[in-house]
Length: 613
Image 1: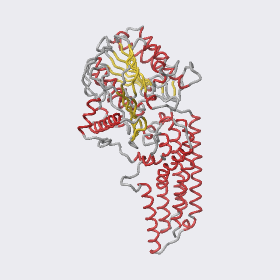
Image 2: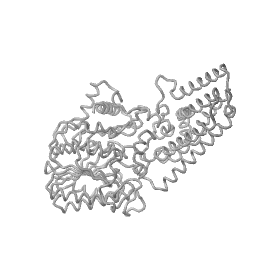
Image 3: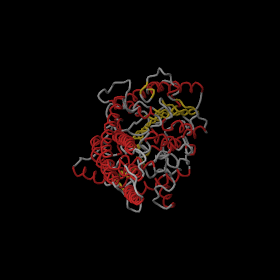
Image 4: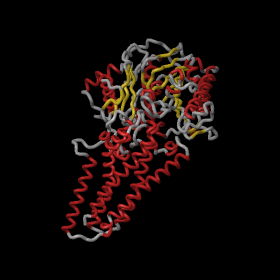
């Protein structure tokens, strides 16, 4: 009669043991390469002890259904409980295997645990799998199958052996049925307490966070729990990150984000140049030799910078393209818990550089050799004021491609021809061109650095960019042309950076005949500052770009940069760098009261503003 209770307990214990013995070693062994510290036995022990809570929570979730099914069958044995539980075991084994293996494999790329954002990428299967080879996918799904098989065998053994008494089933008297119901209710209460926790506030992923090293926290955190928690967390903005009263928050931000002032340096010969914004996929400073990067990679960027203007201390606003586009074109800060590009109803309400220039008579175009349906890019490009969109579907099928779309060399030729056509028509224009070749799997028609496929792919785009600029120099379009080359975000080539500040360091390069001078600008700035700085050079107001600053203006008196990553932020000023994890609400690098205070005030204003858009 009470066999179902013992069955549920054994089922729960097995799930916890499996997650601790199989899932955690798999994640740790595969991803320790990103660990910035020497791993010790003490570190492993703490990962397991702190991570036990989230493993127990997931085990409780998994056990809840078998508890209910077996309890009902004990009272009313009118169905084949063995078949029902076997089907459940198959489903839950595959689900846990997919989540755990995907989390393990993606962590090297993302550096954060799998969460609900993964479903955004799965809306386009081509985009989701474009970064990896067919062999990689076969290997990954093989691991999923093995993982699921091992988990299933254990669950099924428990189902068939430990619960053998309940599988037979018999009708109970009402007194015995009441006792079974009370036992089931008690066990359900225990499961609920494990999931919720015993504190005033319910459990959340921070329950396992204990270390200043994010890798250890992520290793400890069960991926299925993080995914489930993120699914239940609505991305509502109002009321999030409330640290100060409204007046104090506004006072802090008004000093940090001045929207007035006049440029102290004039970079342009003309206030209305034609503008090409090249958003170079993942161009971190680590590929630019003059910024301390690898020698021999972005050599044309450095060559062109000698005759142009290089902003040397720019920090990317965030860590993914969907955030980077909004940082650049809207001068709007990236969000650590979501991406505003998903909220299509809000996009027309964001400030936008192309939309601003349209009012000045500019023809606006967005060009990308891949699919614009991925991550709502087409929605954002249109909402931000681009009249015409060009994507892979508009390019001849004979064009050379990689998994992400048309190779950069062909697309640079396309943009060149488009510029020549606009020049012939006498149009004033602004074009956004987003590259794609310097992205996993780094397959490019170029072989200058054969021993390093990552560096070689960046060298390929650099080669295409250099030839493109040289062709334009010899064309009638050059004299009135401003080319701005900037990354959407950085790239962690080593997968083991000393600091997030190295990953987030990106260049901004101005070149073109419209420039009046050449120089290096070493002011600390953010990617989001490009919009206001450009508009300042064009003598156009930019007060609607509330998070973008003209770094060349006399009002820019507190240089700093702000970068967000998954539920955390990095604040950099002349005194140093502070990185804060929002889950634990602690500085995990460079603790500093003022930088932490400013960063939290920025987050509060950002989310309050988003709630009103």
